Length: 408
Image 1 (cartoon, helix red, strand yellow):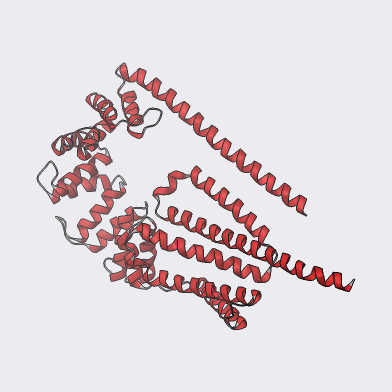
Image 2: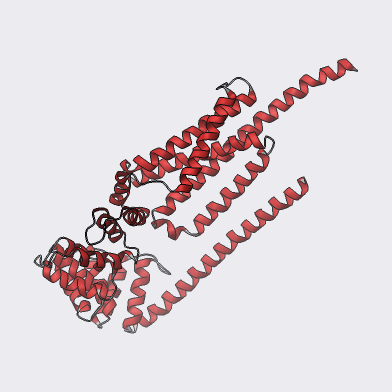
């Protein structure tokens, strides 16, 4: 059995090494390909090819195949825009808007955005609407903003749809119409726009433009909260959302088992078995308390980092509790648990490193920290229990040894 276990661990390590090696080989090949593409587009761009100039500018902007350089990106976007490339005209306006690679200049931003917007480019139409809405580079004009937002929204641009919905709800140059506002919010929310998801949650919570429906409200608030929307997270907390049936069953079982262990051990910390039962019971109760608190009050943690820290702590307690409960049912399986936690920890972190692009989703860092905390809590507890049980076994052997000799 031990030999089989060693082969299993060796095989797992070899698979992990192969996966890591493949990832780095693939990444290097991709970088090499991007560098070759950048070189080829550079040659064509120098020859005056507007499309190549636009692509080269984008590579400099994103830092793919070439060092990231916003100034160089702006220069190539400008050259492509001067040759009538619509997307380049939009990017020049965008970079003037935000001062990326060039001195911020809202007037120039409006001028270039209008060139692309007049050719029907949705991104530029939205940007131009934004400039009119906030009065950046032009006089503030909600009617012009709504006109350009609508042009972009009709092409499916989610951010423009969200802003247009807001203008209908708040009667900004358009007649107040909650139904129409919700219609545009839904179009944007269906594309994953967090602002629109949060707005839909609010609409359902007060029955504005839709029937009053707290379940739908919670659904849309949850979608927005997963993307880091603070208002949605706080709203969920304030609503005191009811738990699902499965959540209630799990919580009840953990609480009942914890109380059963505490009663069975009589709260004693002296003897080994009683101490294990007491600790398991206390940790189970602590996890229940943290879970109830997170369901009703976690919204007061307005910082996303504070929320991640709280859920990591809760997962750490869960990991320790799981091993304590397991130690009662399987008292001599700590090596297996420790090895499993170690392998899962390595595999999960390699997966996280290989999919770093997902970290801009708010739910992903929380899941990453939570799973790591769970595995760390389980691994540390398994290691401690493995050491303590090993010491107890040695002590018992020392006590039994003289007794056997005296019998002889």
